[in-house]
Picture 1 (cartoon, rainbow, N blue to C red):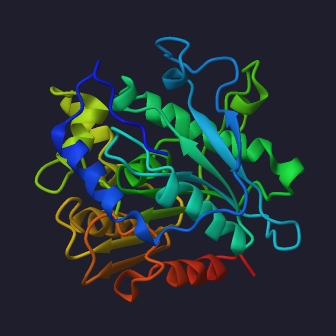
Picture 2: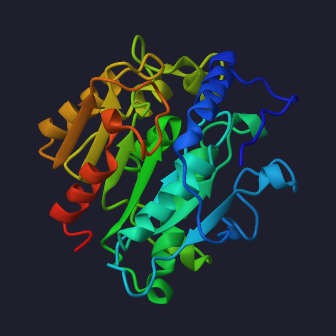
Amino acid sequence: MRHAPSSAHTVHPLAIATIAVLGLLSGNSISSAAPPKTELLWPNGAPGAKGDKPADKPTINLFPAPADKATGAAAVITPGGGYGGVMMSYEGNDVAVWLNSLGISAIVLDYRHAGRGYHYPAPLDDAQRAIRTLRSKADAWKLDTHKIGILGFSAGGHLASTAGTHFDAGHSDSADPIQRLSCRPDFMVLIYPVITLTAPSTHAGSLHNLLGPNPDPKLVESLSSEKQVTPQTPPTFLVSSSEDTVVPSENSVMFYLALRKAKVPAELHVFEKGQHGFGMSLNNPATSWTPLCANWFRVNGLIH
């Protein structure tokens, strides 16, 4: 499912080009056996909603792990799209099916973005809400509330890294029981992520779509994830490639080094080959990150 940028709002041309490239590279996708169940992320209306149309109502696709495989771990998936769209298929639903095969439950987040007329903080609000929502399903899905993570691609990787560096323990005075839960992810998986919003390594389209044409320098600093790492940042698995000219691998390297400095457990893989948007690389040994990630899950006690 791809959301075309709305004609009523300006979306950076580089982001549109990136979305097109990602679409061309999605041929190594898989499909789930049955369509996932979809729910509204904010049943009573999203904060900052500009109207009551579908574009104003972010959703989540639900993928509970099969009961005979479930490990208690779960992840929110934030697909990429340059903050101008959301790649719900090969960077979303397909990834959830793979996680289910490992015994990890998942929800795929169709978050608000510039293509729908939304900028910061709407995407982060949605990501934080999705993490809380996943924790709210602990009883129904038999989840361990200390094994709730986030997995993101490209700009969705930036969103995931932002969720991992900007979080709270929940709002105890909220009338909404979901909002009382923590939005801190317990682990992160970042695949060719946008990390920094500063030149020369940022993705200009993502920066423009997230913050607009003249962003506040303090906000750029706050949302450059490599500058926000603390010892409380969750353990992280990172993947990038040296051939990526859209989101340079320096993004992943900077974040990895910041994690190292803060003594946060981290694993980084920079492949020699692979253009941006290689997805799950099911048929591409040059960027075959899924077995490495599964091993990382195992080492960190997320799967058996």
